[in-house]
Length: 195
Image 1 (tube, rainbow, N blue to C red):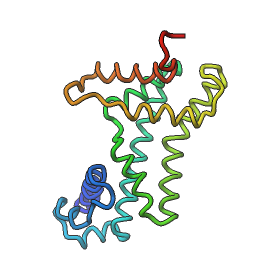
Image 2 (cartoon, rainbow, N blue to C red):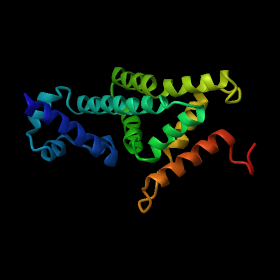
Image 3 (tube, rainbow, N blue to C red):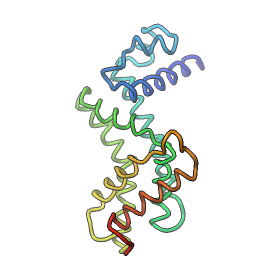
């Protein structure tokens, strides 16, 4: 039994790595089988629906892991700024795999409607709603100006997702600085001076 579980996890992880690098159409079950040293028939044993089934496993695993990281960041005690700093730091430190997230989104066009809906609902529930709720609370308490909380959540997450330390500077202080820059830009804007 452990060998079967290990094969399933190794196949999922290899598919995720290749998906992030090559996109959905660039991943084949033949390549996955070779990489994890099993026969292609074994992949169908673990994932009877073939490539879409393996992709669904990757998307589900990614969403659950990213959601847990997000919940941990949002549980940071303190102010809105403290919570946003924790969230931005998780992006800046490379905790989130933005390339995989983007490829999961792009790949949904190759799925059946029910599969696409399942991925979308899980993503929104696990990753968008918690940040939207944080923004709604901040708008209600006056910490943020009156604006659509969904827009604020999406704007912040998109901004945070673009920040990555350079290859030459992947230190914790670099990630912290980038996180502060993102949060300050979001909270104060890009104009000269501070309000």
